[in-house]
Length: 198
Image 1 (cartoon, rainbow, N blue to C red):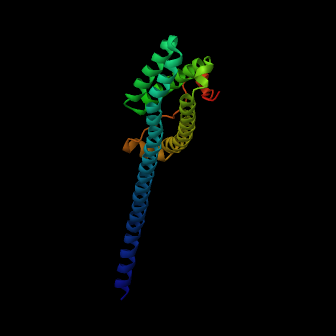
Image 2: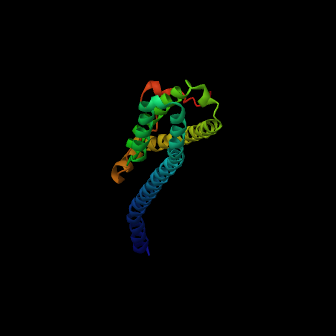
Image 3: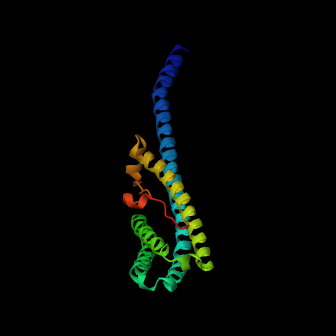
């Protein structure tokens, strides 16, 4: 009996390190899975947030030609400004990635500001009902875009923080999760609000 008890104790003593190692490995695997899933969730949220911005931008792209045509009818000698707006719109529409889209949107916002400034010089244009409706629509779209940008930047900030903090940066490095760009203005002059109300 004594030999069996000693053998049982030795067997249990040999199993304990194996169990501890097994538990540690299980904890690490659960942590890896959880961290990976957290990154995937945040990455998908950033893509969803950007698609919300993209929908609003598409509406703005569709509205700009009508706005330009209305201004063109009253401000014929402002063709250079109108051409810049159309060119900026076309460049923004053909942007292929988020970084390029952000850059082109900043250019378009600057071009729109110059168009709004031009339109202020024409009182008969400001009295046009169609022009006023287009302005109201554009104002709502600008507010929608600003709200979507805030949401996108908030999600991207959480994602980027997770990719940089330890130990998340290890998982990010292993699985290729990289920082995403914030959707912000590129120069100080564009930080002013777009004014589309007269």
